[in-house]
Image (cartoon, rainbow, N blue to C red):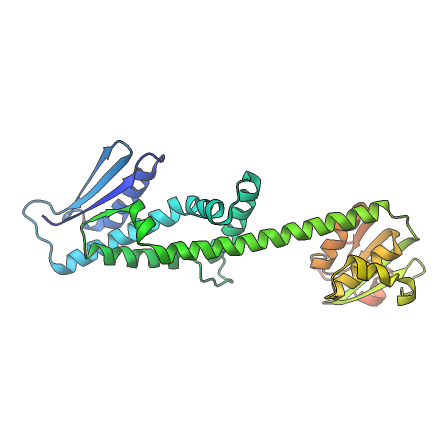
Length: 306
């Protein structure tokens, strides 16, 4: 008798019923030519797709059924099993045990594998492409056998898919570590600012756009190199100096009581960093009489500063 038997672990809540729902959805159009049955055996469940009595499947129809079941199992794996697979890779391959760290790495994984939902982003790790990769492998396997064990498939057959998940986790771990190092560095600078005595009452950071910044003192005079302790720059910041380092280093060195950040782009990374470091000592301004001569009129979206 023509037929395909799918075995899946039923010990996990909803796993068998979820797989059955995927299979039923994709085979719904062929209800008259197939018979679906499900049966539970302790920790396992079987879903059987068989040819009803007095019907025949030709080779073309067998190929259709194989492809549909391959797509159903692929959708099940990506939608129901993938999160647990990622978590297992984080723990087994990268030796993370702390639940908080695992959760943060999973968030980075989610940002990467969920990028296909944004039409402006293209990614090699889209859900649709992963499902197609798995479905193709399963369809080929079903040419050899009418029986398939989903978890055995994951262990022994879907190595390309699992390697892709590992690449996603590796990227997520790198991003997590970079962010962790950044936050530690920010905390260090915040502590230094906290214990440091203020040297000037206020500083004005003028953001002209892009990477163009000017720092003025309370008399609206540009702060020059003579005002900066260069040893601080060398001691506190990396040797690969960039404009963000210079701005942050300058502000920490002159130690203003208040920093007024005049910008039309408050979400620029260096501005967010300065606000993080100086906290309530930093105030954002997107339009005032002080910045108007340098930055020009505000855009229609800008709101007047309080």
